Every structure is written in C-alpha cells, then in structure tokens.
Image (cartoon, rainbow over all chains, first blue to last red; front, top):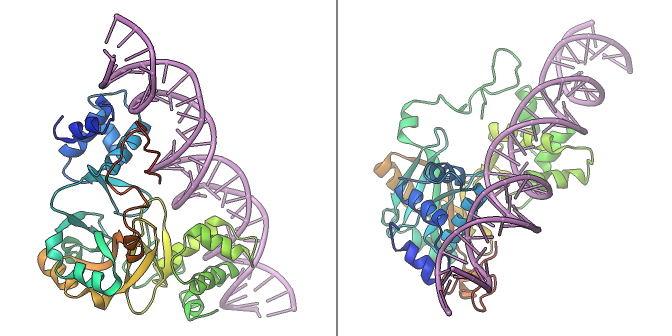
Length: 161
Length: 161
DNA sequence: ATGGCTATTGCAATAAATTCGCATCAACAT
DNA sequence: ATGTTGATGCGAATTTATTGCAATAGCCAT
C-alpha cells in the first residue's frame, strides 16, 4: 500500500491480494523498467510462493488501469514501468542496450508535427540509436559495417548478436 | 535478382542460393514490414522446401549487410523491411496496430535536440500512439480507460488483447 | 562439363517468453 | 464465522527464435 493504487483496485471492485500489492511495490521501488521475470524474482524474495503467470496477469491488470505502462524497448521481451505523471520516452542504445529517458517536453514540436502531418497522436516514443558512451568508444562492439563476409580469409565471426 | 543485393552477396563471398534470392525478393515486393514467418510463407509459395530457420539466418545476414533493417514495432515479434535510401520512422497505432511512416526529415530538430541534450545519435524511432482513424472513432476499441473492472455487474470483457 | 571444397540448408531438438485451463484458495460482503 | 466467486498456483500448451549436425549444393579450378 505504497500508493493510491491499492485504493484504485478496491474501488473498482478488484480484490486486494498480497501478490498484487507486491508486484506494484516492486515496480514502484524499481528505478526503471522490468521484465515480468524480474518482477517475479523480486517479489519472490518476500513472497516466495508467487507464480510467474500471476505476475503476468497482475501486470496486465495494472496496465489496463493505467497504473503501469508497457514500454517498447525491443522485440522478444516485454518491459513494464510505473506510469508517471510527467510523460517520458526512451532512448535505447543499439550497441550496449542501455536505456535513457527523455522528457516529453524536450521533444520540441514533434507532437505538433505529427498531429498536423499525419493526424497521429503520439503517446510513447522509443528511439534507437547510439549512446554517447558507445560513440566515444569508436566503431568497435557490435560489428559496425565495414568488412563483413563469410569465414573466407581471416574474418572471424565479426557479426555476433 | 531484383537488385544489386545479389551482386553484393557474391562480391562479399557469400553464395547466391535460391533461398537467399527469394527472401530478398519477397521483402522487396512487400510494401511494408514482415515477420520471419510471413517471409517464409511467402517464399514457400514458389519454393516450398525452404525452412524457417533458413529464413531467420538469411534475414540476419541481410541485416548484417545493411540490405535489410529490423524494425522495432513492439515486443513478442520481430519485423524486417528493406533498408531504403531515405530513412523513415514508424508510427504504430496502439489501437488498431496500423503502421505508418514518417520521413526522417520531417522530424524537425529532434536529432539535434537529442544529440545536444543527451549525446544520443538517433537512428530509428518508433512512435506509439493513436492514428487519426481510430481517434475519429472515439474511445471505443481497446478498452479506453473509463469504466473497467472485474466482471462485477454488466461489464463484459471490455479489455481484450 | 566435372569434381572438390566447404558454405548453406533442412530438420529436429532446444530454449525463452507468454498464455491457458482448471482445481484450489482466499478476499470481502454479509 | 460463512458463503460467493474472483484470484492464484501449477502444469501443460503456444509462440517465436536459436542451435547442432548431417546432407546438399554453390562456386572455383581444372
């Protein structure tokens, strides 16, 4: 009961279970975004009995109630975070995977541009690119673009994940 | 052999197999983004023997060679599209799932803002929101926000997928 | 055109993430 | 305290993606 969330749940007729409370608490305590598995692991430290499927169901519910939002940080995994008052967006580094935030207000006229140009109401942006740290490291890391090719001569597997 | 792609492959020492050619052709013929499964199904119509794992491996290769790029349209599935000369970004409607394009140049000063503010070099944006069509339809569709709740009174399952 | 070297492929097994059915359990109103 | 019924745990089923390996087939040299 760290928040009005519990009240919200009850007011809407949902039962207030320890599982739900804990999932919420864990997400609130977290600084950033968590996968369902991470949430589950965290919750289990104080409530060992919780099951991953319950976590999924709870997350789904919280998203439905706009207490939590699902971020879009890439394929093959879902991430969740507490829905905050000041909207923000995500900068995902394609090289190191780090995730930074940008405040919505720092987007300039983007909303207006999209609204005018395409009639699109932007809610959440995910911006993929290269963070300053990785850029500083030069073009090492995840196989830049230069000399790729089959294991013809001496080019190892320069194209990992 | 619809493009320089085949030449690129051979020049780099990769073998030119029908599977690779067909995956490339299918992607080129497609208007938008395709999942690996969709590509596979398409290719199979003219080359029934191709296997999904080959499709994955081919897509990975084409991405590596910057002939194809992986788009980031949401979790739980990967999508691919031919890498085009003029960069564009994606507007994904959270309600109907439609995907529209925005030209990079229409983003205004966003690149500059991100570069200055966070030292971040943006490459690909995915913008989630509501498209004009859905907005016009009012707040029906994917359970807006108003009256959600357990199956208490007469509220059906207004919150499907 | 032929043959050999080895990159590629197909297939099946595997892995990871998420969902579903159902019997049991426990919130909450009475 | 008790009943009603929504919520949970568990295992099985799905979906999506990856990997090992033997068989196949490009491509170069002949």
